[in-house]
Image (cartoon, rainbow, N blue to C red):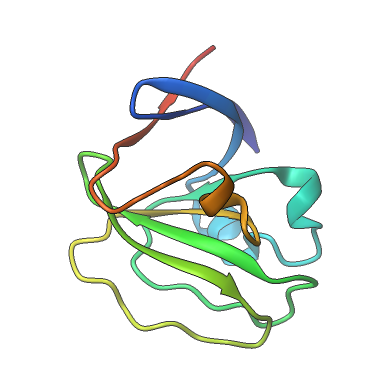
Length: 114
């Protein structure tokens, strides 16, 4: 998986792994500890599930410009969330990380090569 720098409202906040092909998107965080990954960007994506996950996660849905559309906090394992219209990608974090980063709808999330 590629690793880049996660940027929220033009501020670098840490590393993000990119899942941008069928197999990486299919696996997502399955079999991985979300706290060890930090953040996972899945694109394209407008809906998630947490079947076979080991821990709860936060899910941030973003549109094609990176604008945050919706945040699902502390999604327990074995759940399937509804489709978020206009979502082109999601960023998955360990549970409660979105709140720690103070992510809100309307914020802009991008990735940088650094």
